[in-house]
Image (cartoon, rainbow, N blue to C red; front, side, top):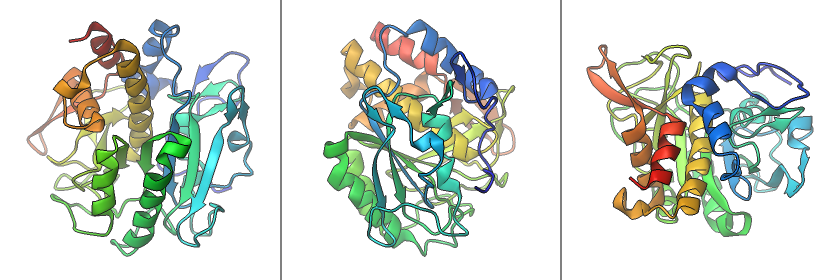
Length: 314
């Protein structure tokens, strides 16, 4: 299997005790404190399914063959390119096999952020780094698959991993726009990475689209923005690359979704849809980051502050 590129490293391969996938990023996002404080209240994604739309997943790797007490880690698959249920990557595809680890790993004692969640692996592009918007059609087809099957599998969240590595300051009209809007109306979170080229004048497509949250990054160990950014970023999340930032954001949204339900929090005061409300809560509880290069102010996700606020009912 090709080594992951642009994904946070896994600190340890096997542990007798439960350890985080990446301690440095998890610490800055405040995942570890949230796990500890809400261990008796939250289930870390249990019952929810995360759909990972990427360039394919090798399901033979042991991480994706895990059987949890409540069911298999991978509960659904789809390939929108060939219109079948085989998400196996075809070279040069490789990225989708590992991009779910930061969010969903539950193997050999090593845990992703929402480690008890289910996963649906969907191959929707030939490679994660796109050549323009030429594969918008198969991406849209995959998103329509999510829309059709979200109730069946309880898909609450989509990690839309592909990116065109360009720098857009506004949405690019494509075939994905209508279905992104429909997914938002169904209260399904969809987010995408902003890119890793240190652009300061725009972010990648589809992260720049109106109904897809654009996720940027801060430097692990520092509250400092890096990689691609512009005013249309929605949220920063600590990671070495925005694929991991987006994976963490998607997983944290699953935890926030459950917290809202458990706390009886009235989310309608924060947004017209649940994803809009969740993003607003992440933003207002996040750490303020000022970026001299863009003259923009961003918010860095602080999961503990977010969950604390929801249970306080602020």
